[in-house]
Image (tube, rainbow, N blue to C red; front, top):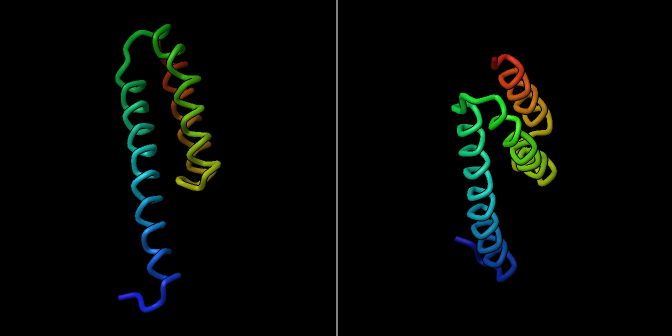
Length: 84
């Protein structure tokens, strides 16, 4: 257990930030799943900018790695382009 006041505060801050980050990461994952499960190309193209924006925000705040974000966006774009 933490002995110093600053260490106790740090623990509280980390817990709060972890909860915040988990919410945004889960929201983005759900949006990615929704995009991948979409069968219509027009609907997927409409969702794509919103999902890429979410992914970029996660990468900017270091919730996910920037290369992971690039790979996700690339795979989603390929998925959309394959649609008929």
